[in-house]
Image 1 (cartoon, rainbow, N blue to C red):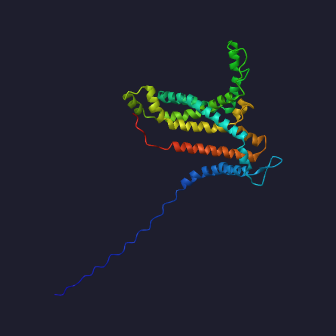
Image 2: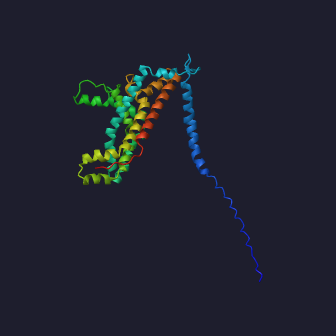
Image 3: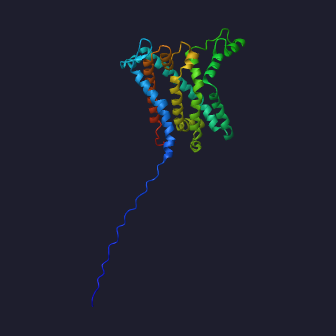
Length: 304
């Protein structure tokens, strides 16, 4: 009997199908490009120009000239300019502290107010932004000057016999800075307090903690990121503001912002003004890095 052997042919190799390339997402480019162009033209290029000018020299007629030098940075460490920087930091620190003391109760009241009133209260905080800050500063001058509203009322009431010098000193500058920067403290605090989970406070009350203890042990630590964010938003601009010390401090309050402004507009020493601007910017970046370091998310500690 003949056996017929059947040989099976190997199946054909299956060729992998060519993968189709996904279409390019041009939406991202159209979204990012305007912002990138804006930052390059109005931030990066001017910053590079200031950096280059800071290493140049002032000419005899107030211009800029070569050779390149680091003399402008060395000059900034003169005791006179370091004192101005120190006074600026102290006044910015005082402004930040008073903004925390005044802003935290405001933010807490708004965050704990009925929901139908929150938007109204927030609007009252934002309303000052609708008026030019120079106009608001002049309003404080009308209030604080020797013949101003406050002195006039106090003298008519017989509380004082001679006007009080409330203007053109460092105290008036701090008042102006607090008034200008207070909304920048209230808004981050409100955001931090508003999202605070009330369950933590209820747990603290169940464990026998009094409201004062619950505030110090629970509310304040959990809202610390808002305090830090508001402090950065207040401290850094307070260093650079120059119109408030000019208008409310006169010649008795010269801050780093006034120094930089005077170097560009009065002394015509653009290289030194640019060097001072770069140093102030480095100080600002260090503060922002400090904020990013301490605001890193850490494991929550149990509240006992």
